[in-house]
Length: 304
Image 1 (cartoon, helix red, strand yellow):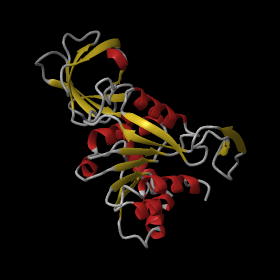
Image 2: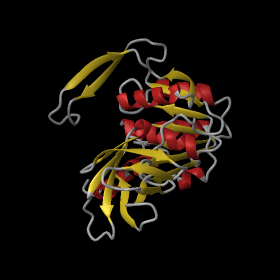
Image 3: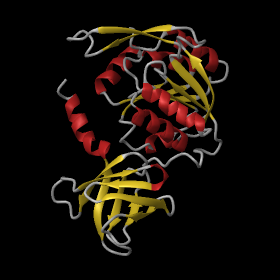
C-alpha cells in the first residue's frame, strides 16, 4: 500500500524509539488503515490513535486486532477540544493527519501546549507537502523544535521518486512523477522545556473568524475578522484596524467606527465575545471558520 508510510520510515521509528520508549505513550494523529499504528503498538506501551473518519478507524481496528494496547478515538484535531489528550500522559506525538498548513501548525502548537511530558514530535510527508515543510520550519526558527532529523525515504539526501495525481486516483486523473531530495518524514525533539516559546505567534493569528450579531437568531455572519501578525487587523466592511494583547484572553482593539471595543477569547482562542465600547453590553460573537464547517464535514462522511 503505497499511501502508507514506507518500510524504511517504520524501521527508522523502531530503531530510534525501541531502546528508550518501552514504557512511553504515543499519540498518533491520522490513522488511515493502521499500518503505522501497528508498528507504534509494537514499540510503545500505549497508543492513542485519532482520526476524523470513522471508516478509517474501523479498518485500522481490524488491521491491528492482535494488539491490546491501542485506543482508537474519533476527533477532528483542529476543531475539537484537546482536553481528552492533555489529561493523559503523552511522550511522543506522530502528526500525520491533514497536511495543510493550518492543520499541521495547529496540531504542532496544540501538542506543545497541551501534551505532557512531551519529548518528541514526528511528522510524515515532509517530502511532498508544502504545509508540513512550512510548519516545521517555523517551529524550528523559534526553537520549539530542535535536533530534527530526516527519517524514511530520502533521509540521507538521496533523490526519491514521488508519484502524485492531478485528480482522484484512478478517476479521470493523470499520474505525475517528481523527484525530491527531502526526507519522507522528520523526527524532532521538543526544544522548549516549559512549552511554547514566547516569540511564537498566538494561535488565533492569521486565522479567519466569522462574526455574528447577538442575540443570534439565524447563523448568518455580519462580518469576518482576521488577526494579522504584529498587531494588524482586517475587519470586513470596516477596513483595517489594530490589536494588542492585554493578557492571555483579552485584546485591546482599534476598529474604525468603534470607540473602545473590548474582545474576550475563550480558553482555546477559537471563539470570542466583543462589545462596541468599554464596559458596554456584549454585541458580537466571533468563531473560527472551521468550527462552523465542522457539522457539515461530519454529515458529509455519512454519504459515503
